[in-house]
Length: 381
Image (cartoon, rainbow, N blue to C red; front, side):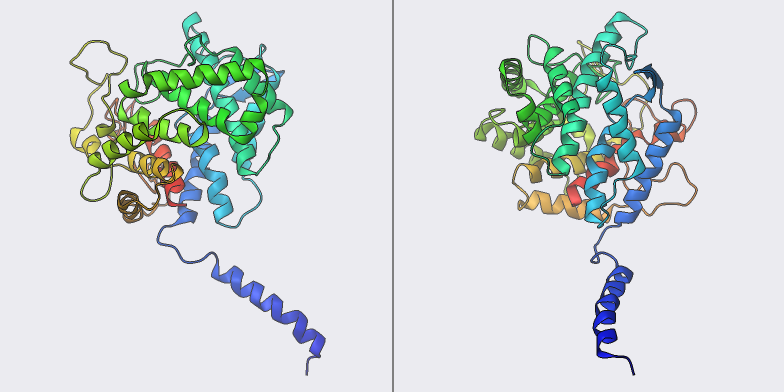
């Protein structure tokens, strides 16, 4: 017969083993599949992304469609799954940013084939570096910025344009590499500056002046922005005070809700207008797209809108509940060995990529689905 001490010691162990076997509480979406897809896509990114020189070594560029959403969504998903140790990709993204921040002035720009692209790359990287470092500190509950975060935020204000925004990569591609993406970049900068460590790193004349210029830019340009940019402005306003009035916020929310489809989803196509950097209509994408595919609801638009509404304190609205139901119902089971399989899908506004070929091989074909999966995760958590 076991001793009383043996029973006392074993009972908690049995409880722990049962809890491990049971896993996290049952849910109506597959977190493990989302994590697996995001990790596989980052593994592919490190293999195929452009290699940059600087700081005595080599790094990879970071993308708005794959690496940045990963840095935002994957730590939150990992913690929700009860995993405390960062993934190798989380660590590598942070190491990449830190290496490039530490070597400002010596790093190869994201694009350097023209002087214009060097300037655009400088603005994009300043925003993304500050955003990734402050997002990491926010996720970890840090109250004080690290030294490299201070450097990145200082760089953010150093390269800010006089109008309060930043130069942004323009290849005539929606939604992130177009003239209209300048406003989007400013909202990402506001999310960095409005975080607790971003505010601390911005203390002082240069930072405070930069924040005020940024706030003025967002307020002055909000009303003329496409709904996609206004949705990002909701995220900015959730971090940085004074970006919009309550009335402006309510108007954007009502506009978003008016675009929600009867099944609960949103379509990226409806969050335009999309101009592909063109100044005169009629506006058209640079290549053919499948009208039926881009017209329907997609997980990037739905995840982004629901996440923005929840971050704005509006998580109890019926539109949010319908959007969450749509996301749960539209998660796709991963197909083993299929590089074009994703838990949630979205499609290019620029080219018909589903047919394969030079513009549709799986690496590029899935860029929008990287966004879709990351923002579906952020909305559902």
